[in-house]
Length: 250
Image 1 (tube, rainbow, N blue to C red):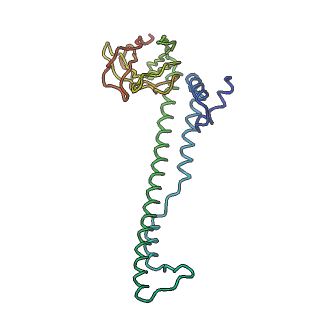
Image 2: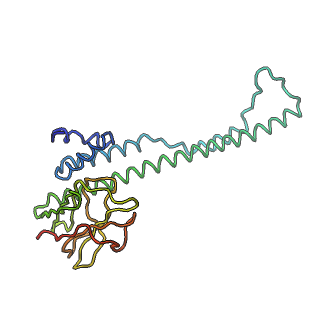
Image 3: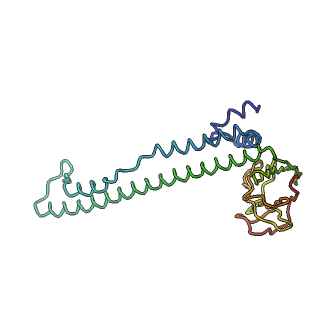
C-alpha cells in the first residue's frame, strides 16, 4: 500500500470500512501525518453527529393522545362473528379495553425505551468522537512541536518503540510497532519514571500490535518511562518487572 493510498483512507477509516491490515497501516501512517490524523478525527466526529441528527424523538404528547383515544375507539368484532348480547357486549368491551390499554402502554414504554437507548447510543458515540478528536489533536501537537525529541528502543520479539517528548507541551507520545499481544487477561501499562517512582501513564490497547498512545498526564519532572504487564484494567503500582525502561531524550 502506497503513501497515496493511505492518504485516501481517512473517510473509510472514520466509518470503520477498512480491513484490520488497512486499519493498522493507516494508524501507523497517522503517527507521522498530522493532516490525515486531523481529517480522520473530524470525519469520525461528523459521522457521529449525522447519526444523532437522523434520530427523531417521539412527540411528548404521544402518550397522552394514545391513552385518551383508548377510551373512545370502539373494538370491532371480526367479520362473520355474531355480535354478543348487551350484557356480554359490555363485559367484552371492558375486557378488550383492558387489553388495549395494556398493549398501548407496553408499546409506549417500548417506544420510549428505544428512543432513550438510541439517544444514549448517539450521545456516547458523539462523546467518544470528541475525546478521540482531542487525543489526536494533542498527539499532533506533541509530534509537531519545535522542541519535540525522540528516543527509540528495541523491545522483545522484534518489537520497537519510540517516545516523543515535548517540553513546551509538557506531554509525551509513545509509538509501538509489532508488539506481541499481552498474555490472556493482561494488558500493557505505561509509566512515567519520577526519579525511580513509577507513575501510571495509561494503558495500551491489547488488540493492536501497532499503536500511538498519548501518555496520560503531564511529563512534569519525569526522567523516563517504562512498560509493564499488568492485570486487565491496570494497576496503581507496577506488579511485574518492566519489559522496557528508558530515559527521555534530552
